[in-house]
Length: 440
Image (cartoon, rainbow, N blue to C red; front, side, top):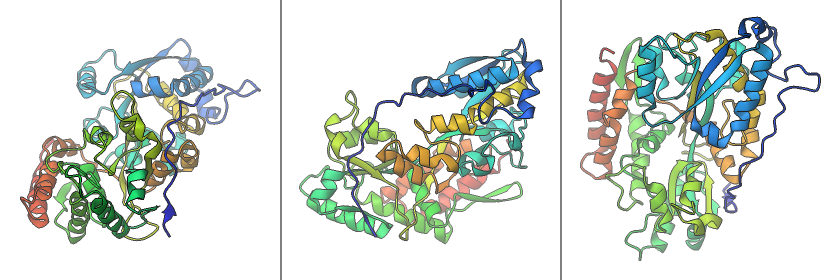
């Protein structure tokens, strides 16, 4: 059954966080008091570890960092120096730092799509999954990104983001659509009504879907049972030509028929385009709601009418898998304090820290998604979407597929009508085979 269109999303101010560093007994609180942690106290005395974290935490949840650091310092006797980083040119900084032998941080944060290439290069130390809480319930997309091809854990899931449908409730309602769809067929039918209602606006998109938006398109591929590539041993084979993958591409192509002006573009400016008032629906990260209604760069007048829901699947009760972006934490192989670095990650990703983090971002474990979902209406959608996810082929050469625009070009050719799905898939598979099997 369809559920009623939810009330407009409320963008709440940041939730005040006052996490106690220890219990009333003076001992470390939950997640920080086992014997292995206590045993490091003597070796940590007089030492300082360096942690590289992105400024997302500095701006969004500094108290979470502080409480984890305080518990770590109490348990180990070591001190922590957090050095805030920026995503721009971050891999260049990592590469130059790892190439040397001094000033190596003891903990680094990486985007989950960046992690595999560093694992392949031997940049990180092996970690013991058993020392980290909730490792059995880590989000799949993050857990896969931190695991080497031979099954060794080398990066720990930190937090995630998922994509959902972001729509204008007022525009949908005026077209007679008062419940959100529970299947793709219902979605297409609803969009037909919305498109017809706004036929007088030549610039109107019932669902704005950029032609190069590969994160969105591949979600439909995985939702139809397809995949980007398969592997046998060390050999990879592009799989977009499979019947399942082509069906997923067909499902995605249907959405491009409701889109105006985006066939040769990616999703970079879709929030601004929606804010201009000619778009009823997009698919994007949950935080993009804030971008659409931002007082400086968006349209705050839309705040009362913007809402979200997970992308439905082919059957009621199913969701189209969402690409799970996010961050991992790793200990560099050249770090001077590898054991202490692993201990800090343990505190920063344990239940205490992740429960606090869940007020601001998707935590690293399915066991705490309910905490995240309780914070706002948009979180309900992104939290649900995080339960059904996909991830790119876990190979160091994958980055070359992205930078080579293999998927983007194939999708653009489909969206513009220059190529059939079968032809575009065949061309992309050939390039994927070549890139993924190249010597690294």
